[in-house]
Image (cartoon, rainbow, N blue to C red):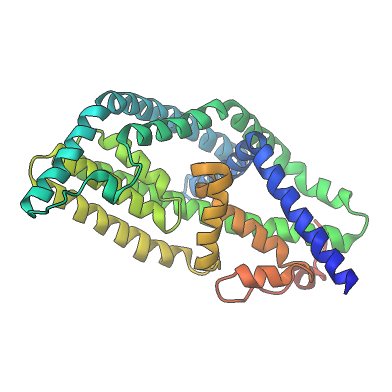
Length: 358
């Protein structure tokens, strides 16, 4: 009994220590994790370039990596300039939109003949357009401030890729341990490339369709809303809903009639439903195998310690945790509990014990 209590106490201390380190070391860990996700995205993009018929076979992998990295740098600089300019313009107009939003609620209350008029604070307590814009600018500033460190991490990951497996083999004194580590790395890499590649493609399509719809109805800051939709699409479950509500509320404030508001709300809802609820699950399949309840809990946990960036990264982090926990008898029940259907596969060591080390 004392031994069990001691183990439970040590486990609780370990969890508290890890949580403390995650909060204290966020300035180092967040850029590192973002760099890892970007590296998987670059790797997926390089494979896509090499899969182009006829020409792709002539492109060696190192050249594909360089091309992918250059494309991402150019795209990132282009998007950052547009988003920062749009945020500055919207911040200047925030008081006007705030007053207009209060007027909309007052008009609705008058038309419904309510004795106690409905205010914005009744629907969204503590909501402020200015504070929302400031929060978005804060996230953008955080990423921009860490961009140099992220870029350095990505470069070193590219340079170290060719020797990383050899280092893992040399690190372990027993071949089966090295085989287990390499198997975990391969499996995590395959799942992460699958998730990052498909999620980015779906998010890009959602962002572009949002931009075209808002541009067609004449709503300003269409570029900004397209980028926000692209980014929020990485946040599971609630990200797409926030994107639709945010753009729809702005359309309600900007336009004097309800027809354009309905076009925006229904149109964005259909885009999110088709791409997020139909196409995304079909392309993802069961490769992630994460419980929806675990995703919600993970969303709350990582969001509480790392903010919006933590919410964006929660799914890749859970993939990593489940994959590692599934390989060891002591932590395997955790992987089963976190999985979507209870099936986490056989440990990689058992599957690969007859395969030679490369």
